[in-house]
Length: 92
Image (tube, rainbow, N blue to C red):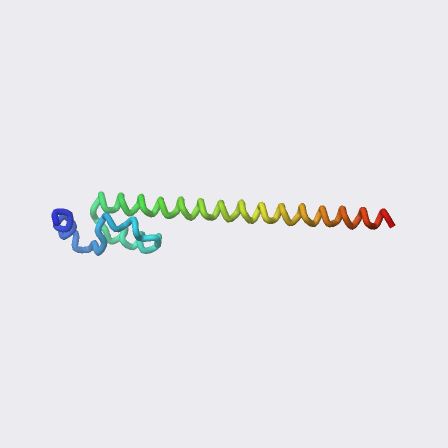
């Protein structure tokens, strides 16, 4: 209750500080940030936005590495297939 009364002083805030961890949408957090006038609340929102950006960057990098690996594997398979075809051709 003490925490709830703390937020009642900020009528423009529809979300409590503790619930920012559940928000995954950066645009939604940005809207909340622009509405908020509470320094601590803005600080927590910015921190959450940073977490989301870092997670997106990490996911993007993992996908990039996976695509790179798959691409390398495909090139290697094509090279091996070409070598086998070459050997067959030379034997005949």
